[in-house]
Amino acid sequence: MKKFILFVLLFGLIPSAHAADSSQADPNGFVTQRKFNKMIEIMRHFYEQLHEIEAKLKDHSQSKDQTLKELADLKKKMANFSGASGGGKSASADDGEVNLEDLSNSEVKTADTTEKPMPLFKVYFDFNLTAAPGLNAPDGGSGLSFNNYHSYIMLDMFPEKDIHFFTDVNPSPKFYEINWHFAEPFTIRLGKIFIPFDDMYPHNIFGGRVNVSSLLPTGVGSFLPDLYADLGVGLDTELLNTANFNWTFDSYVVNGFQSGGTDPVTSTSKYPNFPALLPTSTDTNKNKSYGARTHILVNNAIGLGTSYYHGRWSDQNDPALYLSMLGFDAQFYYRKTSLRIGTASMKIDLPSTATTPNFVRSANYVELMTKFGTNDRWRPWIRAGQQDLDDRIVNIDDRQIVGGGLAFKPNVLEFSIEYGYDTKYLVAKTNYSFTNFRVVASF
Image (cartoon, rainbow, N blue to C red):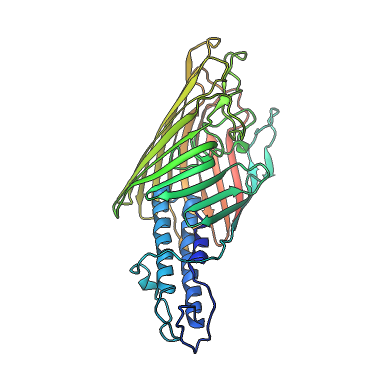
């Protein structure tokens, strides 16, 4: 999502369009009419490539690191376009053209432009018809309802060549970042940043279904927040990038989880809070949480990742209590088919008033997805997963979901149907099946 703005770089890379008449020479290196027309053709070519990458980001058809590599390659082509189109030699109506095939061979240059970059707005909206018998209905209601889970207007902007800002346009934004690529290969991130845990952030499918809390029965939690973003600073590094091997390392320091939850065993004992969204507020202790993720991609076919997180959750005036989280994930790609596997475990300290000194949360998932049809417009998948949010008890938070879905994207609209069934039976549960008809508009 946050990378879509790269298209706006193109406008910063195009020289000033003081277009001369197409019959005149261009001794000052300005853009002739014919050359300008060619630029438009090249821009259209870049946009088509960005549209393909955008689709990969949305449907998770390949790893984040591979997608970022494609974006970096496209960004380089955009810079090459600056070198090819704004060169110093004179251009006539006959020779003032840019050849697309020359883009990968031309020297990378930085454009000298006084034009201010324009912000790019993206819209992401969905409309759903959900059938979940017993969902949020203690009396066993039908659970059939129209719903809306995502209503986003997102802003992306490059105020300078190496600085990127993005957020959702909202009086209380759920995320916002300033990314500064201050030196190769380092990027520093500031704000309410996305936490790089697992391969599928900001959303994940721990437990067998996308972790949107509004899709769950009342009182049922998820392993990680809906959007895993927190106030802090991060540092992203690409340690190695070749045609057959990519290695990244991303680290961060953030406020972290806080107290405020309810202990399901000892209700009067303090307990960490695992909300749908982490708060945008002052931290409750001086200890900062920290973590890192490293990932390798081999031959664009096998990806392996490890994620770690550690931090204090108790308040400053209480005894220091910590939680640690460790995750592993793997991805396998063959042509248009991908297989993803992930597992994570979290160990949490408890105060002396609890029945045990600590407890464990755990979750995992597996997903098989492919694409077919004209322009890969059809995308079926099957997935499964389980979660246990407190190993001291068995309750409605425990789930084992299996299911699948089919999506069709003919244009900016995507139509999909998804079904999931919870095979973990408990008397206290009111909902087991979930069917969702969905339309997504993204542009």
